Image 1 (cartoon, rainbow, N blue to C red):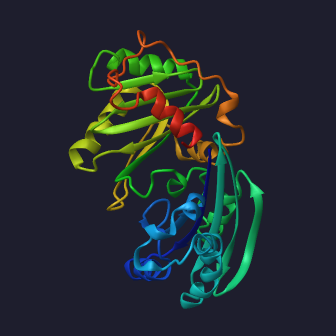
Image 2: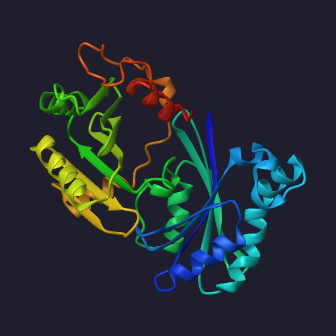
Length: 315
């Protein structure tokens, strides 16, 4: 299943609350959230699937039929953003379309300033980097939280990199420490792994190359106790490895960085794309249940395997 979003991102240091309220008032039925990392601002996003939502479901009887829903979500964001940007002539607005299928992603878009398009990028797996760099010159990373599927409902996120260590080695480190603990679920294949505690966190590991593992995750609680717990877990589980992890509170902007690699090495790693090849060309050979435990054996809720497949394929 394709995962396609349309977003605009604006950097704002001082009047974020006022800008956010103005965006909410002007872009009905969009997801709007303040962001703190990698820069301070606001993101506004809609999804391709919204065009198929029944027109009767929208509050205020704003739509009279399904064609109006389709027209609104196909054209309103782009068309209205041009006029809206004139209210903030000193700000740049990055309009970015992201399309992912089976893990393979492309992006395209342009920069609007005071009603004018001043910079554009054609579809490419790294176009969003150049667009975001245009509004924030220090921007370097291919990974961007607002383009993850659950950003608008997550309380906090985890962004990490492990280098010069094999996926099997990472699994062994985690499994030896937590494999017999009923509070955790671990699913593992040659190229992917999920590590989950249903009340505290979720970590997803993706093998990019033999020398690089990308790590993404969710903080289910942003209480200090939970963040300290995850921080200590990372330091203990990955002791002796070369890594970088950022624990980010989406509500307050607080951030904890845990790393054993220097800034130059990190910048070289995070700038490289990892969504050029679809995951579904890779085999999903997960280990047997006897090797890796799952708490969801009853069938009353999805197994870890099912959740991971759905996450990867966008279901």
